[in-house]
Length: 342
Figure 1: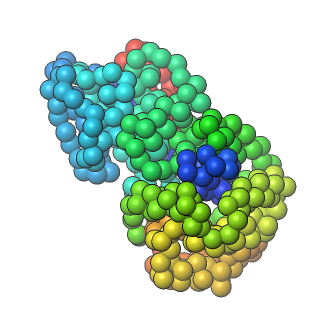
Figure 2: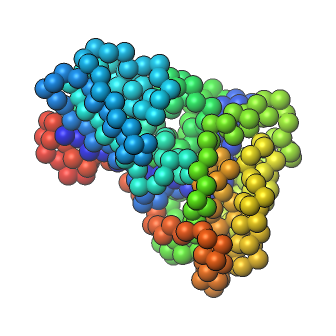
Figure 3: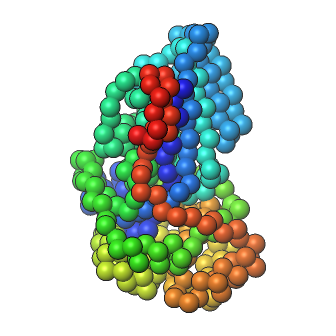
């Protein structure tokens, strides 16, 4: 048995510039961080010769005879099927996936699943993949095999872990720049940067497809390179520990993002953001593509409890978290040898 995990992420600045439609024109730059909520993959060989796939998140179960065509599927287990096909596996294997956060909530759990699958399958085959190779293979699965209209920040975040700036070149290559933050800054972020579940799950692909089309046809508000500027300023604010400036960037960045595609926000979401800003938040936005999921809010110093109570009064559920620094990991490997965390 092999057990792997990969963390989900919160996007902090530059989200949207990791879409191919954007970075092919302007290059892309995104700042994000992973948190201690994980996607797990449990993989084991079987003597039946068949393939058994189970997803707890989608309450899905499939069983295939050895040699069955696992590719070209649009069901709930399409990602797992694509991963097995991509690694040339078609029999004698069971795969179980589970996430600590609901799918469709803007934390990148789908891409974290892709990363955890690549980590598990490469380990199963005795191949040592670097974090970069894991991220690139996960991007290949989602963007090329499945043709998902998504960006590339989620896969790289899940593979590397921690705080990073990712630079996306027009040719699709990615440069990773880890951000080493002072311990007091990290502590303040975990206290002031708050996450709340709206209870709304959404189909990110539809929003991202529209967003990509609007970028390609120059139908978005503001300067095309605003996203790059926000990412650069976000990185500077984090490294200097200026969390008030970071809160303002979150506020301005959300206003920019709302104009990138229909469905990014709704009247109810706008109300929640306004409530946050009226109760001690310097900035607030949805994580991920928008339309629902988690609300991210930066509280002013000393206003953390006031903000929390206001969001609770709105019916939103807080997600208490710590930052993750490990990225994709192997938790257990008894297929070839017993292992602790790798």
